[in-house]
Length: 215
Ligand code: ADP
Ligand code: CDP
Image (cartoon, rainbow, N blue to C red; front, side, top):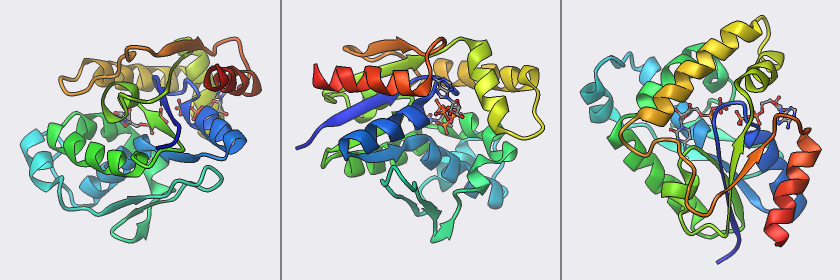
């Protein structure tokens, strides 16, 4: 099977933009696993599932049909044939996704889907548990980091009408949930290379990952 590049790290560290750039440069596919957790969360909100009740989330986790594309030039994500690329980026989903993603039944379902897609290889897979759980045999594992300030600044430049401070607080909350949950928390995989992107631009980070692939 072909090359697998696993890209993990906290929110705003550059996973999506770097992964897409690397996939484009090498002619690989690209999978955004965060979009799948967001799609699951969007559906739970639509269904008015009580997100304060993990058992309620678990009971419904098998219902939505989540289909993810793998084109780095136009990532597609559908839930029961509805295109949800835009609504999954909205703040209601962003505010709830880490709670939904902490439920083991949700992870079991989405990890199985992700392994199916990544199994054929020739792909850059991006998320929180790719090097540790989804693709532990990936040939290249990258752990992207950046200072909390830099990550918040990047995110607030993308989201209209948000202050850096509010963005930093929201991201810190999500990072804590993501790295302290019991099932598959965000952590650096064995064999991963940590890349601190605080002082680098996108082109420099992509070039650094391409060097790791060639090494
Ligand atoms: P993640 O997927 O880890 O949340 P993104 O790839 O969405 O991160 O990056 C968030 C924002 O920061 C994007 O607007 C992206 O263009 C920008 N960005 C990413 N990496 C860098 C970098 N090294 N330098 C400057 N801006 C960056
Ligand atoms: O783009 P950003 O880094 O802000 O988030 P994302 O990659 O879209 O992921 C959204 C959320 O999904 C994360 O905060 C995690 O709670 C969850 N997630 C996860 O648990 N495991 C993954 N492999 C990917 C995302």
